Length: 87
Image (cartoon, rainbow, N blue to C red; front, side, top):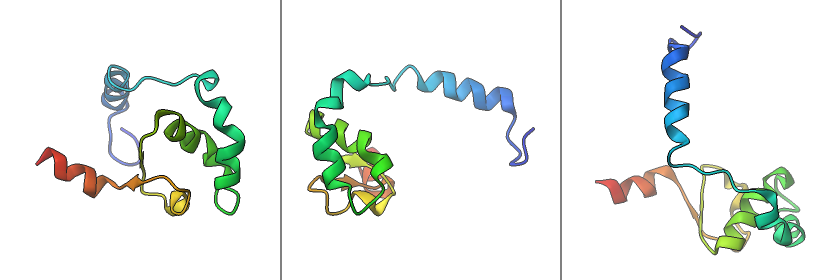
């Protein structure tokens, strides 16, 4: 058990299951948007540029609870909005 009361083996199993639906994106896929993403993130958290670059490359919104993406020119969706689609 961890400090949060979660069994480590259960947590690792859940993380392994996520690999079935979440696929890492190689930097080669989105690096062409790096400069534009950095410019859009300039007054925010520039460490988030890869997420924005992926969204720009895929032409899709960003699913986040982070307000750093507001004003970047890309739509953001929060979990409570995404949840509406699963009801």
